[in-house]
Image (tube, rainbow, N blue to C red; front, top):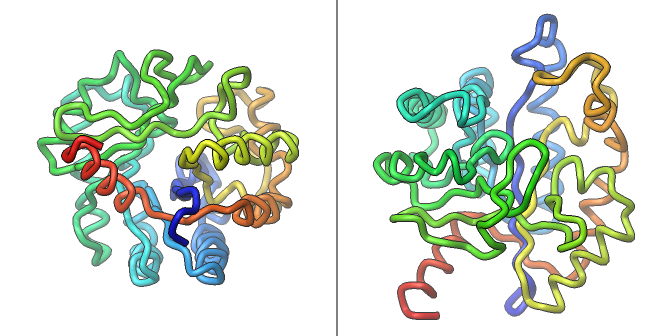
Length: 279
């Protein structure tokens, strides 16, 4: 695996159905969907990072423990999946403490990594970094380094950056002319030739691929519902369901492009060493 392009694959273990009326039957599908990801990784002898929401960890502690026992990193993804601008510093700190507590209660070591809900860490919410540092986090992967209709930090740049003692690992973008993440709904719905071409460009340049998915991204049988934050007739609800049946096949195709699976924490540690020793 030495010399291959790093592929930082992650699963954001959240379930928007937990916050809607009547969502409980679908929520029970999450452990089975996580098992699909674990099998995918086991076959490839690959490591990944699972950014876990606290309310999911409390609902399924055995699942969280199973992920860690399989050799994967557990990191924080907030307690109730509320974007940072809607929390503010004090509420963010309390939310994060509950997230940590839920993960530790599942029998997992205290996490050192964090991802903001919806990549909502932006220039206006960078007050989060001192709080992350105070609570012992060494890295974050919470920034979309581009303008985005929801949340983005256009001036951040594509490379990792230390903000205080916290290393920010911005998610990878498709290209300069299509500045959307190479993960989640975009990985699921963009034409596959475009996705593969974007990743091949990164491998030729030796650039790591920082990507992500969710449990619902591979759940074509999930009942339809209005996604929290969107009206029932929003086109986003249609996009949230599009092409889920083919998502695992897409991940398999991506995994064959000369990539080396790595957890975010291990990669962050290697970047930190390079920074400390001047590259």
